Length: 154
Ligand SMILES: [Zn+2]
Image (tube, rainbow, N blue to C red; front, side, top):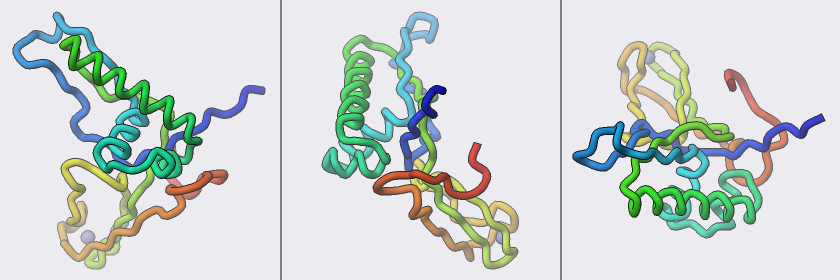
């Protein structure tokens, strides 16, 4: 029996997933694929400036695994910048740390990733009220994730 894959937790799902060098047609470009967990590693380590130990905990992985992921991610970004290649963010083995929303006006509930760019709209998608509560999925961060919690996970 194969071991089930180990998921990496990511808090951030980008809306912009394709970067390309200006002025060159796509057909002339090589493309580098950065996975969602590689992007998350770059975000936590190089944008949020967190210690690797903290980054590893946030993603629910060991420090050596985090080190391997961030090294691979930086290598890919370097290759794209130096080699003039496009970057696409796609795929990976990850689960999203969610934020749950609830609308007090119409009682509608929905969820989204914890961090988005641009920031998630905090108006109800159903009635457009701004009377909305957001709650973090505390289960999805720090330490191990033995159990999958909740509903609607693909
Ligand atoms: Zn509503």
